[in-house]
Length: 329
Image (cartoon, rainbow, N blue to C red; front, top):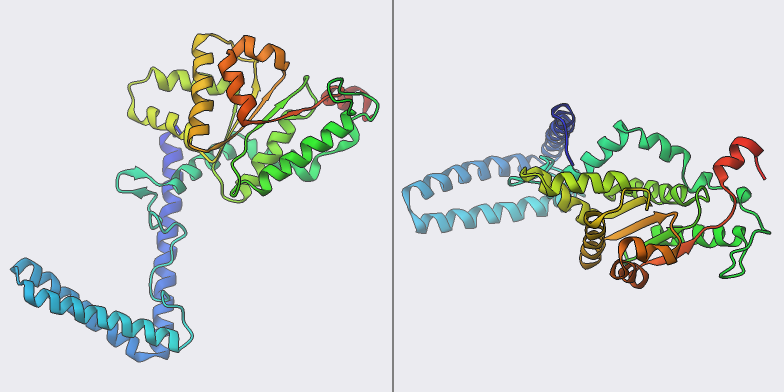
């Protein structure tokens, strides 16, 4: 994700707070445990002394004494764990407790951004783009079936708009419920205003709540970003593109509203294909009819979607118009 300096600083300040909190909590645990079990403090002092001796031995090239020092430190570590467990403490009680053990709350693994940093980027950008406010309103709790008619029919299946909405709603909840155990993709299609974007917002909110990395793009914004990263010589920009292919869930909203050309068609196929290969889930919504889709984006793209996505059609009257002019059904 492309962050401005102030956004990057905001995230790094949070990591600094995490590290300070971790050090403070560790010191509190140490003082409490040392008071209750004084031998633990003695072990810490002995380990520190032996570690210093080990460093001196390394500098002096004394291989034999180094092996002996390592054994003594290992023996003391085992004694410490035994004392902790005997007194009702977990074995790692005197170790730092990190929110992200992978990067130890630094945000980086070596010179590479940790996955928790990338998630923080997404959450920050969501917050600053006001999408978090939208997700507070558009979620499963606020999804209403009152806007769907039980008389308007889906000609292909014979089901009513209400029945198709219930089916799509249940499929979306199933998608979230089994997200970590089953690789799935959803393709939401139907006319304007029948709830496709709302349903994708429901999915996004639930997965963000469970600490998944979710990227949400309108089709226009996605291809605009891919164009900028494709033709950029900046290394960070290419990293952004890879994150689009590797985030837990990518949502592409309103596919078909962007200016379609050969670049868009090829990038869509590559994006879909790459995420399938990586077994990363994608949700796509479009107003296009299925028979028009392959003509716009190519048969091979439609084939990949048809064979790897659950196709969910929503039908009915435009809910936005109902809300504005009718006040309900």
